[in-house]
Amino acid sequence: MPSRRDTIADDLRHQITTGHFKAGDRLPSEAQLATRYAVSTPTLRTALAQLQGEGLVEKIHGSGNFVRHHRHRITYLGGAATVSACTALSEPLRVTARATNLWSDDQLTGLLNVPPRSPLTELLFVAHEGKMPHSLARVYVPRDLVPPDLARGSTSPEEMAMRLAKLRPQLAEVQEKASARLPTQEEATALRISTSLAVLSLTRVATDSTGRVVEAALLLFPGDRADALFTTRVITEERGVPR
Image (cartoon, rainbow, N blue to C red; front, side, top):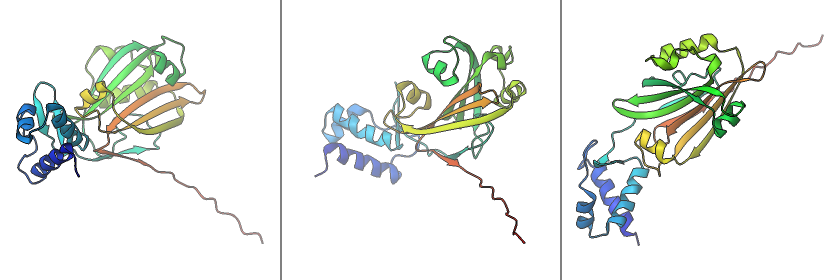
């Protein structure tokens, strides 16, 4: 026998998929829905959380629960030599960028293999679909490989990537690690998703010929709107036929 939570989620899901509630519509308040379904507010919220996890509903703090617009699905193209967060997507989105100088914490010290409190620059890239955030990337670069004025003015993502490429040594290796997990509260807020919606988390670490880490990127894609594609090209050698 289905639980009250599942029954409520099924009914709201039906109303959304049949167009009774359309994309962008605000659902009745939680108090109104709890009264309509004759359940407690906690029970009603677990039903809404189920729909949030499915990507059908989003909760905006202070405004209520809304039917989500369909998110365009993109493909992250792994295996490329470039580490630019702007060029690794199959289709372009509107991207904003911000550079901030900081000092390495424990996580970044290990990721970039640098001494504690080393000077770094964080490049925050947020991809948008319309007015909504779609995905985000945090790229960390040793500060001596960053133009001194990069964090002091507004720069387009394309110009930022171009200026960084001029100072970056030739890359010898790019390692990528992909994992699925739940977002932190901070990540969920930034992407306007539920903390119960799984995200695709990718870590890219680029090193030069001396083994120095010259760039590390932490990329985050909500699981309802992204795939990752890694292509391995196999080179075969023609063998001579002995005579």
